[in-house]
Image 1 (cartoon, rainbow, N blue to C red):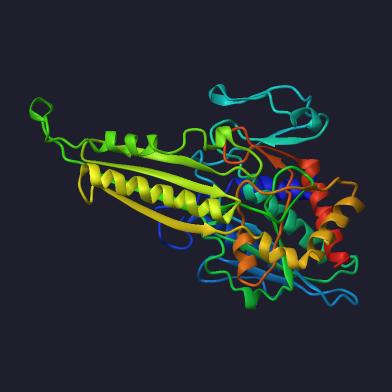
Image 2 (cartoon, rainbow, N blue to C red):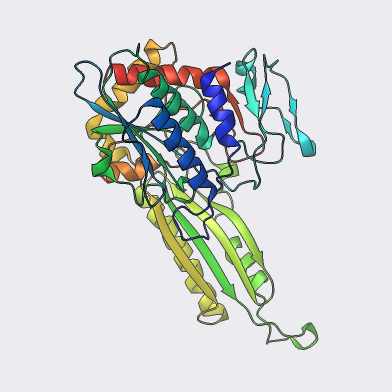
Length: 399
């Protein structure tokens, strides 16, 4: 059986959903469980400095073998999205036939252009009741499997490999407390992408947006000119956003406003969004749109009715990675040597690497081999994970 497959199946069964409303680091206790598991495994491989710090960041260094002075970082995140809550129960479908996959709760994986390309491969899915967690436990498993190869007595010559696993990437905090000097890499790669071959050094500028509404509840029989229904005011706030600038209507470099969560009643209501755009200028305009809507609503309903909280999550890494394009070239060459056609395109999301690039560690993103992240229809190929281990090995052998 595949070593990377076994690791992946073990890691995804550790509940590590990050919780945006929690201000601790990490935001959920399961991330400590996985961090400690990884440190124990790294130590068992012989990685002498394997450790987890007080903030749940895991670090370890594999010394160079041979005359390879470069120090390359490989990074993945331990947390998973809260898109669908619950523990993961993975299923392995061997020699997948390329047809529809029926899971629990009426969930069917079908109609995706990539499915025929997975025919004949072994794929891993959930039982339909949670996310799979390939984002990014596939990256964790691939890096750990590479570590096992490089620590073996018959390992090929390679550069120094600096390994890190971060908490809370899914809520935009994965790089907040990352120890870049202590990590010690010259440059790095996050292994946090999708389809096999993806190589990305452009990402969205991203922010979180929280809209809180305070209403006034009066008995509906005597509410005229008195009631301020917070739930309706929240709906009105949302209606003022551009209706087609949402994920369902955008692609490529097009940005969006994405409503993640809403709740409320007459007295109070809350809307939670993420805001994304590749263009820094348009990104700032999107945030300004939210401010102007809030200002208008407060003029209409009274000052303090609507409160807006905007928090930047990350910026487009392109401007700080482009001066170091040799990093992209090395990854592209590694894909080609391993028989994989590189797919260079912008990320419609973000990674820890975006933040780390601005912290002095140029850090583009590599594929993991998965699809449909953050939902019940998540799927990943075992053979793609195995190929990614080969690609990572090629990178550190030729750094």
